[in-house]
Length: 73
Image (cartoon, rainbow, N blue to C red):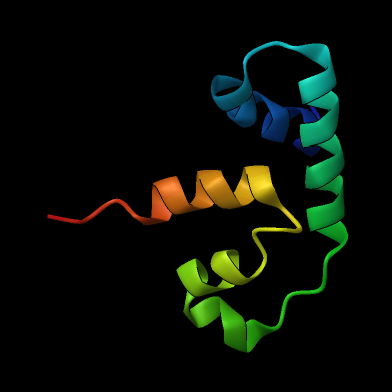
């Protein structure tokens, strides 16, 4: 059975390929994000939150903006 961290990495593998150093960077970024304290008031505008924090979490911010920027029809 996979842990949450392994499941999270599976999602990002489609963006970054299978390069081992890149996986390590993604894993470190995910662990840092999990420990990050998020202000609940900022969650109401997720795209703005990711824009503000894109320098802390560049890989996750890119992925989040790709997903959150999809226009509903």
